[in-house]
Amino acid sequence: MTQPYSGKLIVVEGIDGSGKSTQIRLLERWLVSRGYSVFFTEWNSSLLVRETTRYAKKKDLLTPTTFSLLHATDFADRHQDIILPPLKAGMVVLADRYVYTAFARDAVRGVHPQWIRDLYSFAVQPDLTLYFRVPLEVATRRIAGGRGKIKYHEAGMDLRLSTDIVESFKIFQGRILEEYDRLAEEFQFTVFDATKAIEDQQEEVRDAAVRMLRTHEEKLHGIHTPFN
Image (tube, rainbow, N blue to C red; front, top):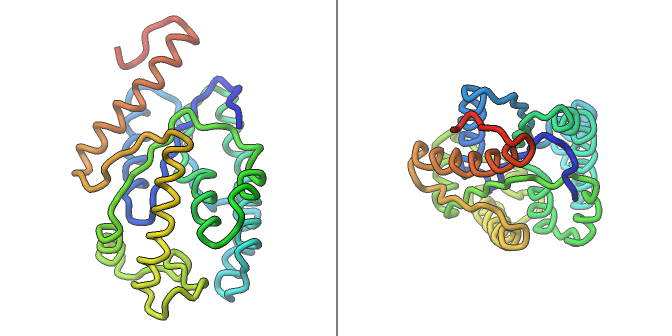
């Protein structure tokens, strides 16, 4: 994975209930207020395969490999038509989940890690990966309290880990958490304590983004950035 474009790619990762989506949306608004051209994208949102994925999930037709291939197709479509154009145009692209979601989830579902990496080898490398690490108990409480219902596949119910959806969620997301911790070391994620107050986390997120963007712009243009 290489990043040959003038734009910058910032991605967020974390298990369900980590609060990453809240943080990236707050960062988006803040960057726009500072004068940056920002583009936002999220995981599993391509119109090309959305209906197919939804139908297959509903009917419980997906094997771990087909699950992986569908998400890779979704990502490839968005990568080509949604992510690359704003990067080429010099924009800051914010992605709510990136290839690392597949690396973690698919591996837990039993797909070979190297096969997954090869499948996504075309993807540009993020300039900054923000990993929001949260204890499993906190994530479970947030999901249950926030929307009152845990989704079938986010609980890994298709893997038959437990007949109880809450228990299955804990097992599945716990395994994903372990994968994320390994990925954080392998790919040098910037790790955040996702149990902190939202405002405190956002301050840290902005600081990380500022450092990356300031270094990039000074090298690229030799001029002051909006943060100076």
